[in-house]
Image (cartoon, rainbow, N blue to C red; front, side, top):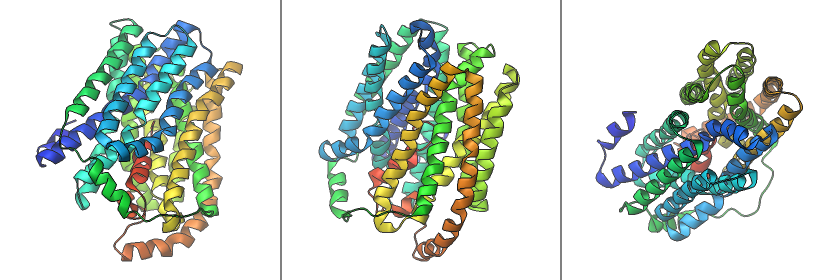
Length: 439
């Protein structure tokens, strides 16, 4: 966790403020999103919920977060990113305060919709603030550190929530979480000198318009199908993992530790699988990550709790690694003039599948049980393998275009390379969200 302070100490004061706000918001909102995995078993016991209702609660939060990303970007362009980011953070905090006062499923559902709407502002606005504050090649390094800060939130806040649940009732815990969101909102709104409305207006004017939409080709459709299955696997597994661990004898603190382990593995997976994709190619890397995901889930089922905890970081690496490989492939399969909407479709499809998966798997859990659903989740991962194999020829055909991009000084497999043709609020939202939970 010394990475971010070390970075802040080497940069100018305006940049330091921007980095602190963006990273702090990323830690908070990614933590808000993933601490739900700890609270879902508590709410099931409190309100007598079925697994389908548990899945729906998760889907409502993620769906609201995904569906409001584009409107949040438009609001930021009109009123300024820092203002919208602060107000969204306050709304996320209010969502958790309302969850703490809920008396049943309906109020809890409304609270999570509020929380999801509030968290929707973070990724596109924070990432854009960082890209505005750091110019040139420094932007890519700053964005990498910004992305890493989200993993800190995924690891820290679920563990902290599980620990707090051992000290106080769950309603007091959610109230504490909500109050933290309000305090963070005030802090964001109090910071001055952040990139704001003027910078966004200049960017909007400089972007060329893209009229109409044409099909992007079979290769992109295959990539999208793999991404949707991968996202559905990730969301389904993480939603019902606490219930599987509970059946093995885990209490809430242990569930918090387990989630921290899997998110730590996921953070390492982003780095390792990005390197793996560059060395082995998309098809081979996908075979490795998705095959390891299926094998890890199946291996987890018969293991006792202690042995299962050892396996979780490996599952996390594989579970989160595929998305880092897939995202960088979009520019290689889509013509420059079509990338803006291609990224929008790619992100919406992935998050949409991730939002729907907990509902579907929740219904299946009510009909069977959680271990049976985990087998179903592992089986669905295997479907990506023939899709990845069929994707290979399209990637080979696209290779000459990718080489042309390199010769022109642009690397089409890197997010920064497409920012001249694609609005950064779209690209950066997809880059930083298409992971565990976030998106």
